[in-house]
Structures are given as C-alpha cells and as structure tokens.
Length: 385
Image 1 (tube, one colour):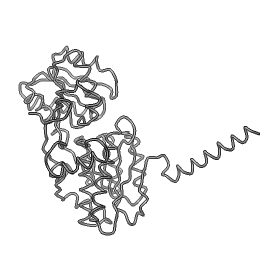
Image 2: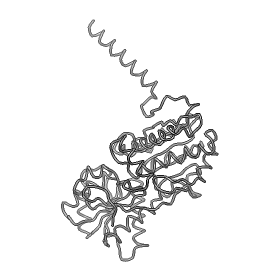
Image 3: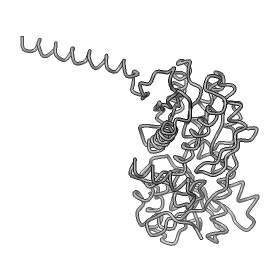
Image 4: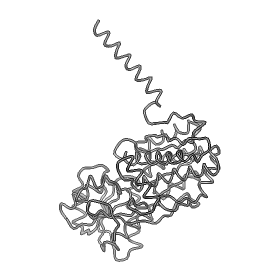
C-alpha cells in the first residue's frame, strides 16, 4: 500500500513536470518574454547557451538584452516592445538545423542574431534563406558563409582579413619569422589554418611555416603537438582556436620554452583567457575589432553598462552581437516591422555607427572593419605597442 502511494506520487510529479515543460517550450531551448507577439519586435538569438562554448552564446544573449533595454527605455519604436528570445544550438550543426526549423515553423520571426561557429551558421543559413528570414551572425568568418544568400549577413570580417592581421602581429610586431601553427580540427580550424599558410607564403616574404599541428578541440594535453612545433624551431605560434585552446597551449608550451611568442584570433579575447591562462598568457597577442578599453564614449557607456549588469567586460564578439541587434532595430525604426523583404533591403543599405565602429554591408553581406592589436600585459588586456 505504501509503495502504491509512492508510485502514485511519482507519477503525479512527472505529469506536472511534463506539463510545465510543454508550456515552457519543450526541451528548454527557447526562452521568451511573455509579451504578446502583436505588440513585440522579436529579436531571436541563436547560439551555444550550454556546453563548452556557452560563453559566446550567453554573451550574444546578454548583448541583445542590453540593446533591447536601451531601445525600450527610449521608446523609439512606436507602440512596440523589443523582446529577446533565445535558442540553444549547443554549437552543433545538427542542433542548429533543428533550431532553424523551429524558428521557421513559428511563422512570425524576421531575424536571427547568430549562430556562433561558421560551420554551425552555415548549417542553418540555407533554411533561413529559403524562408526569407534575416540571419546576422556576429562571428561567422568562413569565406563561403555570406554567399549562401541575400538574407545572410555577417557583422564580422571574413577570416582572410583577421588571419592577415594575426600574421602581421607575428612577423612585424613581434619580429618573428619561423611560424608554427596549432589548430583545432573543425571546419573553421581547417580552413583558417590553410588561409594562414597562404597568407604567409604570398604576403610575408622572409617568413615561413616550420610546422603545423592539428588537435582535437577541448583536449587537455597538447604536449605532443607542442613538442613537434618546438623541435621544428618555431619562434612564434599562431593558435587557430578559441581561448580554451590558447590558454592551455600557452601554459604547456612555456613549460618547455618560456620564450615562445603566441598569437591568437579575436575569439580568444575573453576574460576566460586570463582566468584559465594566468601568468602563462602574458604576452599573448591578437587582433580585435572591438577593444573594451577604448575612450570612445559609445564604447565606454556600453562597457560600463555591461559590467554593471553582468560583472565582467564584454568580448569583441559580444560587442559585435550588440551592434548586430542595433542594426536590425534601426532598420525596423526606418521601414517598420512587418515587411521582412523591406527590412532586408534596409539592412543591406544601412550605415551604422556602433561600438565596433562603422558598419556598412557590401553586396555580399560582408563588412570591412579596422583591427586593434591587443596583448595580455600584467594580467590585463592592453594595446600592443
């Protein structure tokens, strides 16, 4: 009798949990605001809200929330409230396809801010393009991404530009010529490391690639790859990966060669790099579109607001998400919310002055922005001089 009562209680609890889950959007991938759709300007953020790369997706969502609060406080879109809805793609191409299909099935979503990784963005982009939903990725850098269609934009430079800036740091700022590459085994890592090799060969006479090692993303031990790079005589290593590659590589490399110089990409520009790497990331340098220590009043206001709300400084990619939302809302203000084709055309022609500088999309949906060279010095990010 006692066991029957317990089983009945368990069944009742499970039934309630299933009901709550169903009412909240199924698997928890979506978070909404509760504002009536007719009264809302909906901004969808899709990215990794959980998992190893969740910092980036959460940063996108935080940035979108801040921009929505700014517009709502100023009441600049007549009669409507900007609301942000979040979808977790776990930085997985397969999950991104599922998320994109869910977004399409809604039938009333004009824009997606996301996704994060190029391969994930490119998996979802054809679905958005076919259904005339605007996608603005704050981070996709693969050369082929924006070519998927005219509804596909990126508020990030094509990887050739950033790779060239990283090599320039290695050769001209640090004065090195024997370049080693360590790259993650993803679509982005493979394509970017290939681009780095081409740039060194074609644009930097006197410099050469002495070795290239590919590693599995998220591995804890990079020492076998590091030993090969060191034995090949590398005096600078370009790390093609995020902070969770740069930090352990710096730590493990400097155990055997304290003089090694390490150069990264803007996706390593994160407080997590300093926390994971400690003293070992001193001297690590990389190019960024956004630098949080800028004295530009727009940047100062954004950084202070972000720090006050979230307790840490925004990364470059978070800032690019912030401007991406601002671009969309400016287009809504200019042409209205109902016509997605008109919004697409307005975004394509818009000139936007944001925290990441001046943004104007070219005919491919790409942007051209200037880089700031940043280095870790005394446990903080500073300008590379």
